Image 1 (cartoon, rainbow, N blue to C red):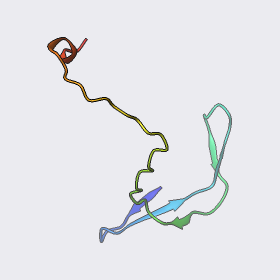
Image 2 (cartoon, helix red, strand yellow):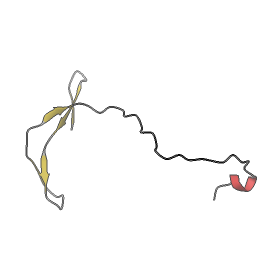
Image 3 (cartoon, rainbow, N blue to C red):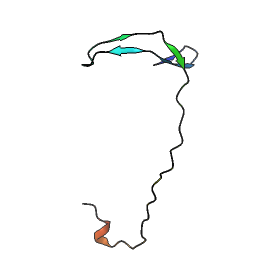
Length: 65
């Protein structure tokens, strides 16, 4: 969860919980702990190569269906 304080600072916490299978109730099983905030991750480079042939598109190919 996240908490924003009066000065604008933001802190992130993790809280251990346990829930029943139906998801209708849960209980906190531990004290909150401060964790680092989210950061942008660089996208992974695809291990797959895709070759797209060059060709001219005619009017029929440019229409959407």
